[in-house]
Length: 98
Image 1 (tube, rainbow, N blue to C red):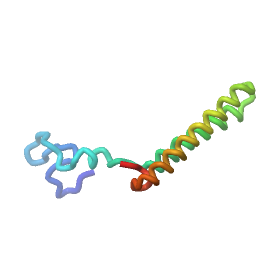
Image 2 (image 1 turned 90 degrees about the vertical axis):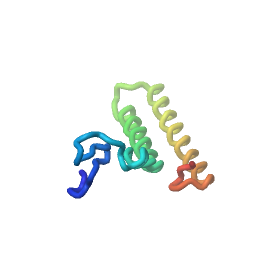
Image 3 (image 1 turned 135 degrees about the vertical axis):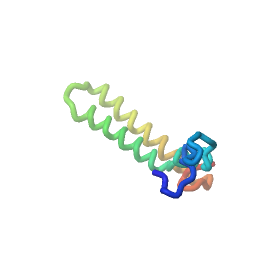
Image 4 (image 1 turned 135 degrees about the horizontal axis):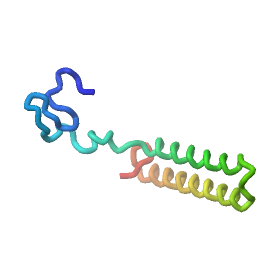
């Protein structure tokens, strides 16, 4: 929502002329910024964990399916942790290397 005093919407709509112009914000500001590595990591971990629980929680999957789910979960977590370590080692903000 734009404040009452705004001359132009974040998308570039000019209220006075009623036309679409260039936005006063740069592309990163319009898209919500670069985001957060840790937030993405948490979402990925949660989704992987839910998948693992679904496979292990049902009696319809055989032992190889369960083993595959466990290996997939371990690989996802392993790559996420490795990426976090590398990002922090390279000095990126919040573990996100530039």
